[in-house]
Each structure stands twice: as structure tokens, then as C-alpha cells.
Length: 310
Image (cartoon, rainbow, N blue to C red; front, top):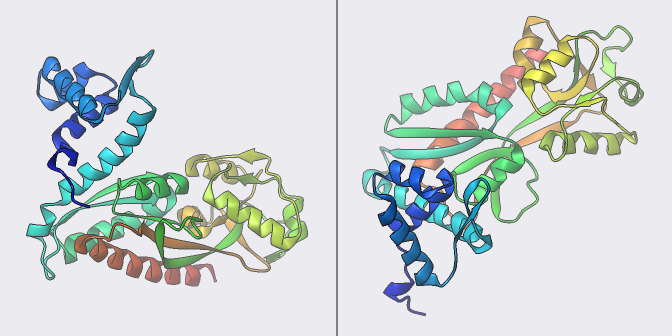
């Protein structure tokens, strides 16, 4: 079926629409775009007339998209993302990948790996620029699916067939706390049931893994406190009153310094980390170049950490 010129969206109008939503109003969006508010309004009206739908409505907190506007917003962001990366086609070649690569990483993983990744990318591919966002696993999956980033790092399985998963590392789950006076060198299932635990809330990816551990051990784990934040978790564990089930990467500095200690769980459990990308949107050569570096760093870093714990 042929596509008429009138069916092709106007990227400039779509960008104006996105800016109005992001700035929650015409006036701040117009200031950001460097155009007058009447001009911006005419472009939005023309966009709505083209497709015969109302995209924006006014609420108590400013301008926000209608139901159909929300759908258009997600698709517009994906189209604009592609448009901005279009020049990479002309700048890239197989020997010198260039351009902007957008990545979404879990907070704990980012803090550990990003400095090494940035240094390696700058050394091996100086023409590549990185834009990194941190978030929860669910947020990262959403950003990849909506085309807001080139790829992300998440825990497997992501439970969606929209994504391609490439395993980069397996991280052992440990019991972590300040003291283990009444627990031996190995943590048994009965030990976990009597300890005051701090766990991530649902729908955090790590909480799903802990629940899976509990099911396989045939026990029930109810946390005393639910915390979604590494700093707060660390403070609670260092108080000596609580314990948690986490991979050591998220607390490696405290563990290496001796401020926190670990006990292996028997049987051993792992968290699998994967690079995720949208199946229908092949990654650019630059993005693939970054994933190769990230994969090598994750593998080597996991080996070093495993040796340090043992």
C-alpha cells in the first residue's frame, strides 16, 4: 500500500506538541523553542486538524495530553528519537562509530559500571557521546520499549517478547548485614525466617528475585521495612538491626571496607543481568559498539568481585 505525502507526520509539529506537554503549557514551551506563543498554538491546531483529534487539554496543573494525545506523545517521542539519530548514518562507518548513544541503567549498576564504561568508550570510540539515565528495572524496560533509549540493562526475564535479551553477567545473591554472631558461615533457610529483613518494594526486580528464592526454599519472607533506595538500605544495614538479600555489587564499598559482612545462602541463587533492546528497532553500529564494551566490563568485573568474596 502506497503512503500519501499527507499521511507522513510533520516532525516539527510533533516536536512542538512534545514540548508543550513536557513544559505543561504553551508559554514556557514557546520560550524554550524560541518562537511566539501564537505561532506555537497555530502549529498545534494544524496538527490536531490534520488527524481530526484533540491532543491537549487544560487541567489544574497546566496543559496535559488527552487520551489519544498520550498515544501520540509516545509515538512522537520515538519518531523524534529516530530523526535526531538520522545524521549518524552519514557520520558513522565501520571503523569510527560516532554519534549519541542513549542508555538506561539500574542505579546500583550505573554507580559501579558507568565510570569504567565512560572511560572505555572515550578511549576506544572517541566519536561516541553517551546519554545515561538511571531508574528501576520497570522504568528501564518502558524506556526501551518506547524508543527513548537505544538499550538498557535489566534483570532477566523481562517477561515481554518485544525485547531482545543478551545476558552479560550473573550476580550471586548474598545475605548482608553488620554482624552474624548467631549465624554460621553459610545461611540456611531457617536463618532467613527469623531475621529482621529490609527488602525492595514491589514491583522492583530484586523483590521478585527474593520472592523466587523464598518459594524455592519453601519459606515465607515478610520484610520489616520496604526500601527503594541504596543509600537508605545501606544506612539501615549499617545500624546492625536489619539484614537484606542483595547482590554484593550494590554494596561493594561497604563490604570491602568491612562495614558490612556477607553470608552465602544455600542453595546458591543468582540474579541475571541482560542488555535489552527493542526487537523491532535494530541497534545502530555505535550502540552495538557500546554494548560490546559494557558486556566485556560486566564479565570481567563480576569475575573480580566473585574472587574478592571467596
